[in-house]
Length: 264
Image 1 (cartoon, rainbow, N blue to C red):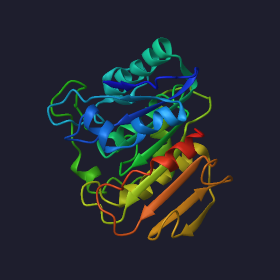
Image 2: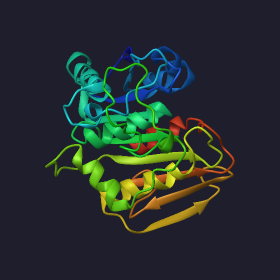
Image 3: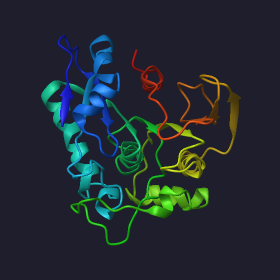
Image 4: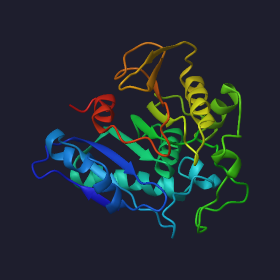
């Protein structure tokens, strides 16, 4: 784990958990992305978790990691958040997560299994929470379980089925659900493009949203923005961005993340 704490931190401060991709690391993701540099300017704490696996992938396959307080990489990351709240004065009401590829998959898992911890997430080229589940996978195996059918965009469910899966990770939870911003490239050959629609089906059901509006060439040429329900790109519960011709993975849009998280 690597933690970036601004020199003149004003507390309680927002926390952003930035989760790296496979073959990545906490230190590598801290330099690949701009969150570390933006932390001083915008007064937030950044946590960069480090995968324990030799290939740098996070466990998004075992039942443990999907289960609230069930162990696995997800609970390890939540424990990092609790440490940052106690040690550095993080604001428990403003905890956010962002990730790329394996980190994007973990971001979906975190907001699904720990809606009481996270207020919002931003997903770059991931898959729905639960899509990568592998029967018999354990939280400690190395490498973590891998689902070819999910990676290839072949795990297709109804919105209700995806939503029920999310709700099963924390049975009985009736509180506020974290907001989601989801990016995916149409030319992704690693976690294929059908996973984008499946993610939107999953979370629109969780939020109970049935209407959406599209806007082309937003925020840039070739991107199509989809806002579900009411609100704007920075206030809606669920916002998607389909990136035409973009592969794996969609480049980070840090300023959009901060705006979506309400960090000014």
